[in-house]
Image (cartoon, rainbow, N blue to C red; front, side, top):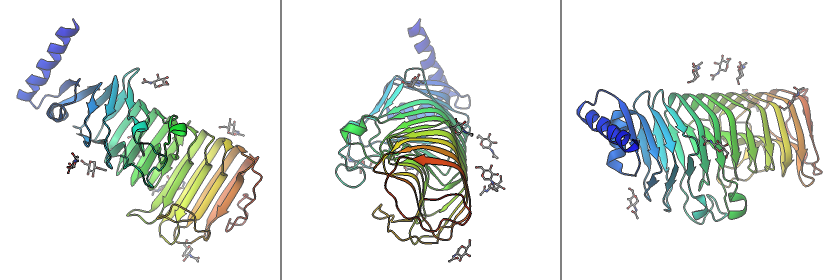
Length: 363
Ligand SMILES: *[C@@H]1O[C@H](CO)[C@@H](O)[C@H](O)[C@H]1NC(C)=O
Ligand SMILES: *[C@@H]1O[C@H](CO)[C@@H](O)[C@H](O)[C@H]1NC(C)=O
Ligand SMILES: *[C@@H]1O[C@H](CO)[C@@H](O)[C@H](O)[C@H]1NC(C)=O
Ligand SMILES: *[C@@H]1O[C@H](CO)[C@@H](O)[C@H](O)[C@H]1NC(C)=O
Ligand SMILES: *[C@@H]1O[C@H](CO)[C@@H](O)[C@H](O)[C@H]1NC(C)=O
Ligand SMILES: *[C@@H]1O[C@H](CO)[C@@H](O)[C@H](O)[C@H]1NC(C)=O
Ligand SMILES: *[C@@H]1O[C@H](CO)[C@@H](O)[C@H](O)[C@H]1NC(C)=O
Ligand SMILES: *[C@@H]1O[C@H](CO)[C@@H](O)[C@H](O)[C@H]1NC(C)=O
Protein backbone atom coordinates (compact mmCIF):
# COMPACT_ATOMS: atom_id res chain seq x y z
CA UNK A 1 0.00 0.00 0.00
CA UNK A 2 2.75 2.39 1.09
CA UNK A 3 4.62 1.43 -2.05
CA UNK A 4 1.63 2.29 -4.23
CA UNK A 5 1.28 5.66 -2.52
CA UNK A 6 4.95 6.32 -3.17
CA UNK A 7 4.53 5.47 -6.84
CA UNK A 8 1.51 7.76 -6.87
CA UNK A 9 3.58 10.60 -5.45
CA UNK A 10 6.35 9.96 -7.94
CA UNK A 11 3.84 10.08 -10.77
CA UNK A 12 2.39 13.28 -9.41
CA UNK A 13 5.81 14.93 -9.36
CA UNK A 14 6.60 13.58 -12.82
CA UNK A 15 3.27 14.80 -14.15
CA UNK A 16 3.99 18.20 -12.75
CA UNK A 17 7.27 18.28 -14.62
CA UNK A 18 4.98 18.15 -17.65
CA UNK A 19 2.38 20.50 -16.24
CA UNK A 20 4.30 22.96 -14.13
CA UNK A 21 1.28 25.20 -13.63
CA UNK A 22 -0.42 22.71 -11.28
CA UNK A 23 1.16 22.60 -7.89
CA UNK A 24 1.21 19.38 -5.90
CA UNK A 25 2.89 17.26 -3.29
CA UNK A 26 6.52 16.24 -3.32
CA UNK A 27 8.38 14.13 -0.80
CA UNK A 28 12.17 14.20 -0.76
CA UNK A 29 13.52 11.12 0.97
CA UNK A 30 17.18 11.45 0.02
CA UNK A 31 19.27 14.55 -0.57
CA UNK A 32 19.60 15.36 -4.23
CA UNK A 33 20.07 18.97 -5.29
CA UNK A 34 18.13 18.59 -8.57
CA UNK A 35 15.19 16.79 -6.96
CA UNK A 36 14.95 19.47 -4.30
CA UNK A 37 15.09 22.39 -6.73
CA UNK A 38 12.53 20.59 -8.90
CA UNK A 39 10.22 20.18 -5.93
CA UNK A 40 10.69 23.82 -4.94
CA UNK A 41 9.75 24.96 -8.44
CA UNK A 42 6.79 22.67 -8.88
CA UNK A 43 5.27 21.76 -5.55
CA UNK A 44 3.46 23.68 -2.85
CA UNK A 45 3.47 20.80 -0.39
CA UNK A 46 7.02 19.63 0.22
CA UNK A 47 8.24 17.12 2.78
CA UNK A 48 11.92 16.76 3.58
CA UNK A 49 12.13 13.32 5.11
CA UNK A 50 15.31 12.15 6.87
CA UNK A 51 17.70 13.87 4.51
CA UNK A 52 21.34 14.58 5.23
CA UNK A 53 22.63 17.70 3.49
CA UNK A 54 26.23 17.36 2.22
CA UNK A 55 29.09 19.45 3.61
CA UNK A 56 29.62 23.05 2.43
CA UNK A 57 26.10 23.28 0.98
CA UNK A 58 23.28 25.68 1.83
CA UNK A 59 19.91 24.04 1.51
CA UNK A 60 18.30 26.95 -0.34
CA UNK A 61 14.52 26.89 -0.59
CA UNK A 62 13.03 29.80 -2.52
CA UNK A 63 9.52 28.52 -2.10
CA UNK A 64 6.52 29.19 -4.31
CA UNK A 65 3.81 31.33 -2.81
CA UNK A 66 1.62 29.32 -0.44
CA UNK A 67 4.04 26.44 0.06
CA UNK A 68 3.78 24.13 3.06
CA UNK A 69 7.20 22.75 4.01
CA UNK A 70 7.33 19.82 6.41
CA UNK A 71 10.40 18.40 8.12
CA UNK A 72 10.08 14.73 8.88
CA UNK A 73 12.30 12.08 10.46
CA UNK A 74 15.86 13.11 11.30
CA UNK A 75 17.18 15.93 9.13
CA UNK A 76 20.92 16.68 9.42
CA UNK A 77 23.83 18.51 7.83
CA UNK A 78 27.32 17.05 7.43
CA UNK A 79 30.32 18.59 9.11
CA UNK A 80 32.30 21.30 7.35
CA UNK A 81 34.06 24.41 8.62
CA UNK A 82 32.34 27.32 6.92
CA UNK A 83 30.01 30.21 7.70
CA UNK A 84 26.80 28.70 6.29
CA UNK A 85 23.92 29.27 6.45
CA UNK A 86 22.99 25.60 6.34
CA UNK A 87 19.39 26.44 5.51
CA UNK A 88 17.97 29.53 3.77
CA UNK A 89 14.23 29.81 3.21
CA UNK A 90 12.40 32.56 1.31
CA UNK A 91 8.78 32.96 0.34
CA UNK A 92 5.32 34.47 0.69
CA UNK A 93 2.41 32.80 2.53
CA UNK A 94 4.68 29.98 3.68
CA UNK A 95 4.01 27.41 6.40
CA UNK A 96 7.03 25.64 7.86
CA UNK A 97 6.46 22.84 10.34
CA UNK A 98 7.78 19.59 11.76
CA UNK A 99 5.88 16.31 11.56
CA UNK A 100 5.34 14.56 14.92
CA UNK A 101 8.62 13.16 16.27
CA UNK A 102 10.81 14.76 13.64
CA UNK A 103 14.11 16.26 14.74
CA UNK A 104 16.34 18.77 13.01
CA UNK A 105 19.70 17.66 14.36
CA UNK A 106 22.41 20.12 13.34
CA UNK A 107 25.14 18.08 15.09
CA UNK A 108 26.72 21.06 16.86
CA UNK A 109 28.96 18.85 18.98
CA UNK A 110 31.16 18.39 15.90
CA UNK A 111 31.92 22.15 15.83
CA UNK A 112 31.71 23.24 19.47
CA UNK A 113 35.05 24.13 21.00
CA UNK A 114 34.05 26.82 23.57
CA UNK A 115 35.25 29.63 21.26
CA UNK A 116 32.01 30.37 19.39
CA UNK A 117 32.70 33.16 16.94
CA UNK A 118 35.94 34.13 18.67
CA UNK A 119 38.21 31.48 17.19
CA UNK A 120 38.67 27.76 16.84
CA UNK A 121 36.59 26.03 14.19
CA UNK A 122 34.63 28.11 11.68
CA UNK A 123 31.00 27.48 12.57
CA UNK A 124 28.01 27.79 10.26
CA UNK A 125 24.87 29.78 11.01
CA UNK A 126 22.06 27.25 10.99
CA UNK A 127 18.98 28.86 9.45
CA UNK A 128 18.15 32.13 7.75
CA UNK A 129 14.52 32.94 7.08
CA UNK A 130 14.99 35.64 4.51
CA UNK A 131 12.31 37.92 3.12
CA UNK A 132 9.42 35.88 4.44
CA UNK A 133 6.04 37.52 4.09
CA UNK A 134 2.84 36.53 5.86
CA UNK A 135 4.28 33.20 6.98
CA UNK A 136 4.04 30.76 9.87
CA UNK A 137 6.68 28.56 11.49
CA UNK A 138 5.52 26.06 14.08
CA UNK A 139 6.11 22.75 15.82
CA UNK A 140 9.78 22.60 15.01
CA UNK A 141 12.37 20.81 17.13
CA UNK A 142 15.92 21.90 16.46
CA UNK A 143 18.85 20.49 18.38
CA UNK A 144 22.56 21.26 18.72
CA UNK A 145 23.17 24.18 16.38
CA UNK A 146 26.90 24.82 15.80
CA UNK A 147 26.39 28.60 16.09
CA UNK A 148 23.38 30.97 15.74
CA UNK A 149 20.19 28.95 15.36
CA UNK A 150 17.46 30.86 13.49
CA UNK A 151 17.64 34.38 12.06
CA UNK A 152 14.56 36.12 10.72
CA UNK A 153 15.76 38.74 8.24
CA UNK A 154 14.10 41.31 5.97
CA UNK A 155 10.74 39.75 6.72
CA UNK A 156 7.27 41.13 7.28
CA UNK A 157 4.43 39.28 8.99
CA UNK A 158 5.93 36.16 10.56
CA UNK A 159 4.27 34.09 13.27
CA UNK A 160 6.44 31.60 15.14
CA UNK A 161 4.96 29.22 17.72
CA UNK A 162 5.81 25.99 19.50
CA UNK A 163 9.43 25.95 18.44
CA UNK A 164 11.94 24.16 20.64
CA UNK A 165 15.65 24.91 20.27
CA UNK A 166 17.57 22.46 22.40
CA UNK A 167 21.29 23.16 22.70
CA UNK A 168 21.46 21.82 26.27
CA UNK A 169 24.44 19.67 25.40
CA UNK A 170 26.36 22.84 24.61
CA UNK A 171 26.44 23.65 28.34
CA UNK A 172 28.96 20.87 28.92
CA UNK A 173 30.32 20.31 25.41
CA UNK A 174 31.62 23.75 24.48
CA UNK A 175 28.63 25.41 22.81
CA UNK A 176 28.99 29.21 22.49
CA UNK A 177 27.20 31.98 20.56
CA UNK A 178 24.32 29.59 19.95
CA UNK A 179 21.70 32.40 19.76
CA UNK A 180 18.16 31.04 19.64
CA UNK A 181 16.27 33.56 17.49
CA UNK A 182 17.69 36.77 16.05
CA UNK A 183 15.47 39.32 14.31
CA UNK A 184 17.03 41.66 11.74
CA UNK A 185 15.33 44.38 9.66
CA UNK A 186 11.91 42.81 10.05
CA UNK A 187 8.42 44.01 10.87
CA UNK A 188 5.46 42.34 12.57
CA UNK A 189 7.02 39.20 14.01
CA UNK A 190 5.27 37.22 16.76
CA UNK A 191 6.82 34.51 18.90
CA UNK A 192 4.63 32.33 21.13
CA UNK A 193 5.60 29.30 23.24
CA UNK A 194 9.24 29.24 22.24
CA UNK A 195 11.70 27.23 24.34
CA UNK A 196 15.41 27.83 24.04
CA UNK A 197 18.21 26.03 25.91
CA UNK A 198 21.48 27.60 24.76
CA UNK A 199 24.63 29.64 25.36
CA UNK A 200 23.79 33.12 23.98
CA UNK A 201 20.73 35.33 23.50
CA UNK A 202 17.45 33.46 23.79
CA UNK A 203 15.52 35.79 21.50
CA UNK A 204 17.28 38.98 20.38
CA UNK A 205 15.69 41.78 18.39
CA UNK A 206 18.74 43.28 16.68
CA UNK A 207 16.68 45.58 14.47
CA UNK A 208 13.02 45.72 13.53
CA UNK A 209 9.57 46.89 14.47
CA UNK A 210 6.38 45.51 15.99
CA UNK A 211 7.73 42.35 17.57
CA UNK A 212 5.79 40.40 20.19
CA UNK A 213 7.18 37.62 22.36
CA UNK A 214 4.91 35.71 24.74
CA UNK A 215 4.90 32.50 26.76
CA UNK A 216 8.55 31.83 26.15
CA UNK A 217 11.00 29.83 28.21
CA UNK A 218 14.73 30.51 28.12
CA UNK A 219 17.42 28.54 29.86
CA UNK A 220 21.15 29.04 30.19
CA UNK A 221 21.78 31.76 27.63
CA UNK A 222 22.35 35.50 27.66
CA UNK A 223 18.77 36.64 28.09
CA UNK A 224 15.75 38.11 26.37
CA UNK A 225 17.48 40.87 24.47
CA UNK A 226 17.08 44.02 22.47
CA UNK A 227 20.22 44.69 20.49
CA UNK A 228 22.92 45.30 20.31
CA UNK A 229 21.48 48.22 18.33
CA UNK A 230 23.73 50.46 16.24
CA UNK A 231 26.64 50.18 13.86
CA UNK A 232 24.84 48.20 11.15
CA UNK A 233 22.85 49.13 8.04
CA UNK A 234 19.55 49.49 9.93
CA UNK A 235 19.61 50.60 13.54
CA UNK A 236 16.07 50.91 14.81
CA UNK A 237 14.16 48.77 17.26
CA UNK A 238 10.64 50.05 17.86
CA UNK A 239 7.44 48.62 19.35
CA UNK A 240 8.56 45.42 21.05
CA UNK A 241 6.63 43.65 23.80
CA UNK A 242 8.07 40.69 25.64
CA UNK A 243 5.59 39.24 28.12
CA UNK A 244 4.63 36.28 30.25
CA UNK A 245 7.98 34.59 29.92
CA UNK A 246 10.53 32.86 32.09
CA UNK A 247 14.32 32.94 31.98
CA UNK A 248 16.48 30.66 34.11
CA UNK A 249 20.20 30.17 34.70
CA UNK A 250 21.05 32.78 32.09
CA UNK A 251 23.86 35.34 32.24
CA UNK A 252 21.29 38.17 31.98
CA UNK A 253 17.56 38.27 32.65
CA UNK A 254 16.38 41.08 30.43
CA UNK A 255 18.90 43.05 28.41
CA UNK A 256 18.82 46.16 26.23
CA UNK A 257 22.16 47.08 24.73
CA UNK A 258 23.18 49.77 22.29
CA UNK A 259 26.49 50.29 20.58
CA UNK A 260 28.90 52.89 21.92
CA UNK A 261 29.45 55.75 19.47
CA UNK A 262 26.80 54.53 17.01
CA UNK A 263 23.49 56.10 15.96
CA UNK A 264 20.00 54.64 15.91
CA UNK A 265 16.89 54.40 18.04
CA UNK A 266 15.38 52.11 20.66
CA UNK A 267 11.80 53.16 21.31
CA UNK A 268 8.71 51.73 22.95
CA UNK A 269 9.98 48.50 24.47
CA UNK A 270 7.85 46.69 27.06
CA UNK A 271 8.93 43.82 29.27
CA UNK A 272 5.95 42.60 31.24
CA UNK A 273 5.23 39.64 33.55
CA UNK A 274 8.69 38.12 33.40
CA UNK A 275 10.02 35.65 35.93
CA UNK A 276 13.78 35.28 36.37
CA UNK A 277 15.53 32.48 38.22
CA UNK A 278 19.18 32.01 39.19
CA UNK A 279 20.52 34.67 36.82
CA UNK A 280 24.34 34.71 36.82
CA UNK A 281 25.37 38.31 36.12
CA UNK A 282 22.57 40.87 35.73
CA UNK A 283 18.85 40.56 36.40
CA UNK A 284 17.94 43.73 34.52
CA UNK A 285 20.71 45.14 32.33
CA UNK A 286 20.33 48.23 30.13
CA UNK A 287 23.55 49.60 28.69
CA UNK A 288 24.53 52.08 26.01
CA UNK A 289 28.19 51.20 26.10
CA UNK A 290 28.54 48.06 24.02
CA UNK A 291 31.66 47.77 21.87
CA UNK A 292 30.67 45.91 18.72
CA UNK A 293 34.20 44.85 17.83
CA UNK A 294 35.20 43.37 21.18
CA UNK A 295 31.74 42.40 22.44
CA UNK A 296 32.67 44.06 25.75
CA UNK A 297 31.24 47.15 27.46
CA UNK A 298 33.33 50.33 27.30
CA UNK A 299 32.17 51.50 30.74
CA UNK A 300 31.08 54.86 29.31
CA UNK A 301 27.63 55.40 27.78
CA UNK A 302 27.06 57.28 24.52
CA UNK A 303 23.86 59.02 23.42
CA UNK A 304 23.62 58.24 19.70
CA UNK A 305 21.01 55.52 20.20
CA UNK A 306 18.44 57.02 22.58
CA UNK A 307 16.54 54.48 24.68
CA UNK A 308 13.05 55.96 24.83
CA UNK A 309 9.68 54.94 26.19
CA UNK A 310 10.65 51.82 28.09
CA UNK A 311 8.11 49.96 30.23
CA UNK A 312 9.18 47.33 32.73
CA UNK A 313 6.20 45.86 34.54
CA UNK A 314 6.07 42.94 36.97
CA UNK A 315 9.62 41.67 36.59
CA UNK A 316 10.36 39.33 39.47
CA UNK A 317 12.80 36.66 40.48
CA UNK A 318 16.31 35.88 41.57
CA UNK A 319 19.89 36.62 40.69
CA UNK A 320 22.77 34.55 42.07
CA UNK A 321 24.72 36.02 45.00
CA UNK A 322 27.68 36.89 42.81
CA UNK A 323 25.46 38.84 40.39
CA UNK A 324 23.87 42.30 40.20
CA UNK A 325 20.09 42.73 40.41
CA UNK A 326 19.80 45.87 38.27
CA UNK A 327 22.46 47.66 36.26
CA UNK A 328 21.91 50.61 33.93
CA UNK A 329 24.44 52.73 32.08
CA UNK A 330 22.74 55.01 29.53
CA UNK A 331 22.81 58.55 28.25
CA UNK A 332 19.93 60.59 26.85
CA UNK A 333 17.34 58.01 27.87
CA UNK A 334 13.79 59.29 28.41
CA UNK A 335 10.28 58.24 29.34
CA UNK A 336 10.80 55.04 31.34
CA UNK A 337 8.00 53.50 33.40
CA UNK A 338 8.92 50.74 35.80
CA UNK A 339 6.52 49.08 38.23
CA UNK A 340 6.46 45.81 40.12
CA UNK A 341 10.20 45.26 39.86
CA UNK A 342 11.28 42.69 42.44
CA UNK A 343 14.58 41.17 41.43
CA UNK A 344 16.64 40.01 44.39
CA UNK A 345 19.53 37.85 45.49
CA UNK A 346 22.44 39.57 43.77
CA UNK A 347 24.90 40.88 46.31
CA UNK A 348 27.08 42.87 43.94
CA UNK A 349 26.24 46.55 43.53
CA UNK A 350 27.12 48.57 40.46
CA UNK A 351 26.32 52.24 40.36
CA UNK A 352 23.72 53.07 37.73
CA UNK A 353 24.18 55.97 35.32
CA UNK A 354 21.53 57.89 33.38
CA UNK A 355 18.26 56.36 34.59
CA UNK A 356 15.56 58.94 33.71
CA UNK A 357 14.05 60.69 36.72
CA UNK A 358 10.83 59.31 38.13
CA UNK A 359 11.19 56.11 36.12
CA UNK A 360 10.50 53.95 39.16
CA UNK A 361 13.70 52.01 38.59
CA UNK A 362 16.59 52.02 41.01
CA UNK A 363 19.79 50.10 41.40
C1 LIG B 1 33.02 25.09 -0.53
O1 LIG B 1 32.10 25.85 -1.32
C2 LIG B 1 32.69 26.98 -1.92
C3 LIG B 1 31.57 27.79 -2.57
O2 LIG B 1 30.71 26.98 -3.29
C4 LIG B 1 33.75 26.55 -2.90
O3 LIG B 1 34.37 27.69 -3.48
C5 LIG B 1 34.80 25.75 -2.15
O4 LIG B 1 35.74 25.24 -3.05
C6 LIG B 1 34.14 24.58 -1.42
N1 LIG B 1 35.15 23.91 -0.62
C7 LIG B 1 35.32 22.60 -0.63
C8 LIG B 1 36.45 22.05 0.18
O5 LIG B 1 34.60 21.86 -1.28
C1 LIG C 1 19.35 33.76 1.60
O1 LIG C 1 18.72 33.73 0.33
C2 LIG C 1 18.32 35.01 -0.15
C3 LIG C 1 17.49 34.83 -1.39
O2 LIG C 1 17.82 33.68 -2.07
C4 LIG C 1 19.57 35.84 -0.37
O3 LIG C 1 19.21 37.12 -0.84
C5 LIG C 1 20.31 35.97 0.95
O4 LIG C 1 21.52 36.67 0.76
C6 LIG C 1 20.61 34.60 1.53
N1 LIG C 1 21.16 34.79 2.85
C7 LIG C 1 22.31 34.25 3.25
C8 LIG C 1 22.78 34.60 4.62
O5 LIG C 1 22.94 33.50 2.56
C1 LIG D 1 9.32 18.46 20.08
O1 LIG D 1 9.97 17.98 21.25
C2 LIG D 1 9.15 18.06 22.40
C3 LIG D 1 10.00 17.71 23.60
O2 LIG D 1 10.71 16.53 23.38
C4 LIG D 1 7.96 17.11 22.22
O3 LIG D 1 7.11 17.20 23.34
C5 LIG D 1 7.19 17.54 20.97
O4 LIG D 1 6.16 16.62 20.71
C6 LIG D 1 8.10 17.59 19.76
N1 LIG D 1 7.36 18.17 18.64
C7 LIG D 1 7.28 17.60 17.46
C8 LIG D 1 6.48 18.32 16.43
O5 LIG D 1 7.85 16.55 17.18
C1 LIG E 1 1.12 40.85 10.87
O1 LIG E 1 1.40 39.56 10.35
C2 LIG E 1 0.31 38.67 10.49
C3 LIG E 1 0.78 37.30 10.08
O2 LIG E 1 1.43 37.29 8.88
C4 LIG E 1 -0.85 39.18 9.64
O3 LIG E 1 -1.94 38.31 9.78
C5 LIG E 1 -1.22 40.56 10.13
O4 LIG E 1 -2.22 41.08 9.28
C6 LIG E 1 -0.02 41.49 10.09
N1 LIG E 1 -0.37 42.74 10.73
C7 LIG E 1 -0.22 43.91 10.14
C8 LIG E 1 -0.61 45.10 10.93
O5 LIG E 1 0.25 44.00 9.01
C1 LIG F 1 4.25 50.28 21.61
O1 LIG F 1 4.41 48.98 21.06
C2 LIG F 1 3.29 48.13 21.31
C3 LIG F 1 3.62 46.79 20.70
O2 LIG F 1 4.78 46.27 21.29
C4 LIG F 1 2.04 48.73 20.68
O3 LIG F 1 0.96 47.93 21.01
C5 LIG F 1 1.83 50.12 21.21
O4 LIG F 1 0.74 50.69 20.54
C6 LIG F 1 3.06 50.96 20.97
N1 LIG F 1 2.87 52.27 21.57
C7 LIG F 1 3.22 53.38 20.95
C8 LIG F 1 2.98 54.64 21.70
O5 LIG F 1 3.73 53.38 19.84
C1 LIG G 1 4.47 51.62 16.67
O1 LIG G 1 3.15 51.38 17.11
C2 LIG G 1 2.34 52.55 16.94
C3 LIG G 1 1.00 52.23 17.57
O2 LIG G 1 0.48 51.03 17.10
C4 LIG G 1 2.22 52.86 15.45
O3 LIG G 1 1.46 54.02 15.27
C5 LIG G 1 3.61 53.10 14.89
O4 LIG G 1 3.51 53.27 13.50
C6 LIG G 1 4.50 51.91 15.17
N1 LIG G 1 5.84 52.18 14.74
C7 LIG G 1 6.43 51.52 13.76
C8 LIG G 1 7.81 51.92 13.41
O5 LIG G 1 5.88 50.61 13.17
C1 LIG H 1 3.41 38.79 37.16
O1 LIG H 1 3.89 37.89 36.18
C2 LIG H 1 3.72 36.52 36.54
C3 LIG H 1 4.43 35.68 35.47
O2 LIG H 1 3.95 35.94 34.18
C4 LIG H 1 2.26 36.22 36.66
O3 LIG H 1 2.09 34.88 37.05
C5 LIG H 1 1.63 37.12 37.70
O4 LIG H 1 0.25 36.91 37.73
C6 LIG H 1 1.92 38.58 37.34
N1 LIG H 1 1.45 39.42 38.42
C7 LIG H 1 0.66 40.44 38.20
C8 LIG H 1 0.31 41.25 39.42
O5 LIG H 1 0.20 40.71 37.10
C1 LIG I 1 19.41 63.52 22.96
O1 LIG I 1 18.29 63.13 22.16
C2 LIG I 1 17.65 64.19 21.49
C3 LIG I 1 16.49 63.58 20.71
O2 LIG I 1 15.80 62.68 21.47
C4 LIG I 1 18.62 64.93 20.59
O3 LIG I 1 17.97 66.03 20.02
C5 LIG I 1 19.84 65.36 21.37
O4 LIG I 1 20.78 65.89 20.51
C6 LIG I 1 20.45 64.16 22.09
N1 LIG I 1 21.67 64.47 22.80
C7 LIG I 1 21.74 65.18 23.94
C8 LIG I 1 23.10 65.34 24.52
O5 LIG I 1 20.77 65.67 24.48
